[in-house]
Length: 154
Image (cartoon, rainbow, N blue to C red; front, side, top):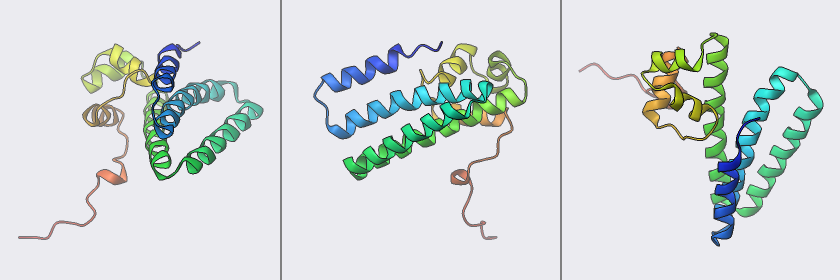
């Protein structure tokens, strides 16, 4: 079973520290999305529709709560969703290529422990690290990173 102690402790610290509701929601969303990511991976193996429906309902509830908290909470939740979608793509691509974390780390010029922490949500990779992982897995460049307009000839 994955170790969720650190994200849960982070949430509890933020909750006890008297932070704003938006920050508390962001911390809770981080914990929930970490659990969701790990559970999604487990569900993929189990192929259980009933549990998947429960997580979909939970994610819809989180979305509603963020909307109730206001635009800042919605923006923070969206940022977390993007982060976890990117992590999930990296994990799925690594598995599809039948690479171990060690194989991926070597291809990306990273340590295996760093790849493990990133995949478990215990470390937030930098843009450079995401880029290295994506390049090592031959993932398509995200739309955000592409030029919008071709350069004009000088």
